[in-house]
Image (cartoon, rainbow over all chains, first blue to last red; front, side, top):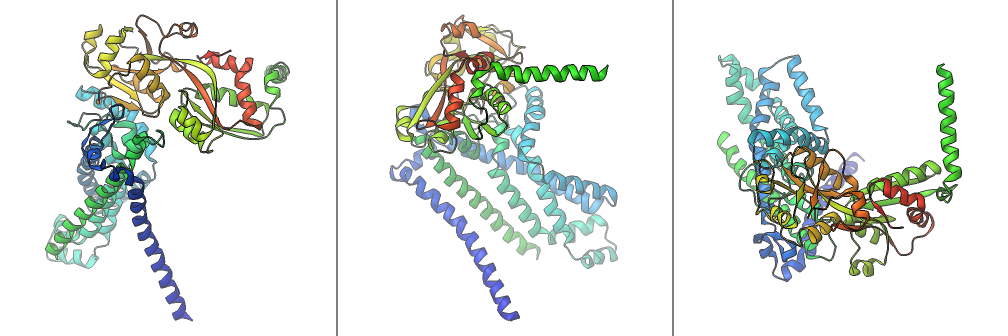
Length: 287
Length: 276
């Protein structure tokens, strides 16, 4: 009886895992299918290189690819050290109520909807950036990535904290026993052992930064040019899809957004794979 | 004393409710009706739709009217696919769209699209040539058009916007919009962006203008209600409501209400030009 139940549960879990994996693939297939007219007309590659000017018959999305990469990568540049520092503060350097309070605050931040961050961005950060740098409208790559940093950091911090705490206590005690300091314990034992957790946190946050629509839509300015500086207005692929989605179904504009979907999908997959690949190597070094 | 004033208030309120009910025959059509109307689309329409919906729902509490934005393109598309009962658009649907979805088109107001700047900006008039040059990115400093020595920040609307379409056709003469322009997703958000940015220039439906933004005369013509009404303001368009097929029941009554004296009065109150 017990054995059959176990077998049944196993099959059930396998099925759910299989279906989720299949859905991801099906999604890609679906986008390819809908984007097929573009491939058939041989327009797909011109779409990757042209500028976006619908009234001139150009539906290129390369400015949006550049915008997406600029905003999400820059936000990771801000968010990774910030999150690592916060996690160290919460789990290593501060003790007692300070650590608990910080942790609760971070946990609360994970629940704040994106649109709230967008609003705060428009009314606080955009005027600040505009007046401080005295260039452009304040709606730019920098503003959006700063706000995105705030959005992705809490999840990353919690992931980092958890992975620090999962390192067996005995390892750390051994370091202290031979006269090592708290910091040495962290740097030489905790950090190397929690590397996989750090990596998962980083990858998930990167995915979220790449896929986030609302913050870029609200405060990046949505200009259809590849950003030349951090203070230029830019449009992400996701914001582009949201903006063009309302266009006529039959129009080429609308068809071109399937190319956006495909590119976004591939971009996310590639970046995640790159992170995994790099990490695989790193793991071997530390072991 | 306090109870007395409360009583007076209550009586006044009752008179208001029943009094208006007695005189506003247009709303009588909704008495005892129940059901739901889903409206989406053009963002210029929203103030009028909200007021009309409030009055109707006040008359008959069993009627639920939901109003969403999305832009003219969304309005036409969602009405055509039956996702909403009424899809608003700030442009007439194209012949293709009408044929494809079997749309019925109702034009219940005329609206001007006004160029707006931040109130702190002294520029209050632009010629069409200046405007075209500004939006094409050839004029980049307010000094060149009589303002302070400040850069110009361009704001335009998304691809699905009816406001954008009429502005691009009639004000810019289908000229280029510089790729540096910021894209904003609704009339309300455009007003917000311009009121926040002292160096910005954008455009909103005349009905949305208030003290937070300053309208700019186009070729010497002020975008005021009166001027638009007289048909002298060149950047104008109709406001449309679209339904899939001939409207029936509650939806038909709602559209009819827009064309009654009271409906058209709401149109005028919200800063648009009645069609009747």
